[in-house]
Amino acid sequence: MRYRLPESHRPYTDAYFLRSRHILEREDLNPRVTMQIFLRQGPGRIHGIDEAVGIIGSFAGNGGRNLTVHALPEGAEYAPLETLMLIEGPIQDFIELETLYLGVIASATSERNGDPLPDPSAVERRAAAIREMLPDKQLMYFGSRHWHWTYDEEITRAAIRGGFDSCATDAGATASGLSGGVGTIPHALVLTFAHRVGMERATAEATLAFDRHMDPSIARIALVDTFNREVTDSIATAEALGSRLWGVRLDTAGENLGQGGTPFDGRTHWTGNGVTVELVRNVREQLDAAGHNDVNIVLSSGFGDLEKIAAFKEGEARYGRLFESIGIGSLFPARFATADIVRIEGRDIAKAGRGLHPNPRLRRVL
Image (cartoon, rainbow, N blue to C red; front, side):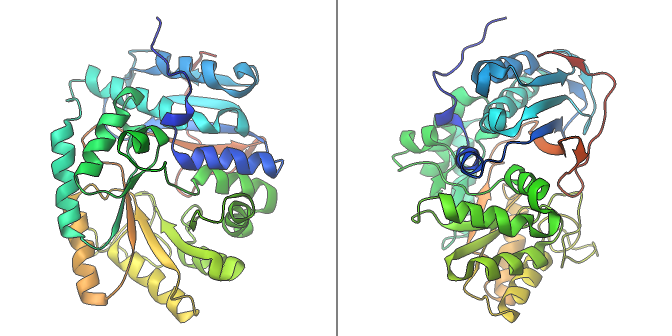
């Protein structure tokens, strides 16, 4: 089956993947990795697999000749968290494609299982509600990977009309009158550096590489949750970059209790796994105690939920300054697809809580 493809994937790709490819090239870092894709929402039938494979085959480096892809068949039944696809190959060949292939899987699976299309007016209302609750925070739209690339401009415009300040893709930015997509470091870049320097140094070294190779006008924001070392890696990166570090981003997965978090005690969004008020409060306090009160905190993961926003607003009223900026993708309901590196050069290296889950039902499709 033939699908419409963009002339180039790059305008529809999250900026931090484009920047990561540039950094990896400059650092001569191109190990063979295994990327694992799954959906949280389900069960149902998986769709968009054939189109995702078409995107990978059309836009991968070296014509995709160095890649192998295994996946469930189009239309197969799937379960939540089940591995739907494995992509194996040199990281530089396909790191830029994640936004597009996740988007087509999420949108096709959502539609074919009876979920509604995103409503731009509802997206604008949700964005406006968040802006009203957080009038002084930077709000970034990071939801391009959650739906088909052909909707990116329309949905992004709705988010910006609702009061968001920026977005992740150049296509969305151009459509909204902005200068370009924003975003700094994904987990894939940190994990690739872990292959080179080890887990303990990976976060700081990935951020130092960003600092070496990116234009000075781009804020240096470290991603510090990859190995569940939110406090340790925040301080280590602040010490490594000094005044050049604008902030640290917390994106702790729902599988994990973040370092410095409080086990769940009944207070939803305040305690428990993921990015919680108490986790952020502790990271803020530890940074301040180490003399890094000038380092800002950026949040992501699940902040399309107005109740979560309300909890953090109350947290700041109680504790004082906690964060400066939020990246939000979930401004509309969908069966969101997620991709994680789980193996590098045959060795298990993964984000905390996201290890390899083999699936004997996968078949080779590329």
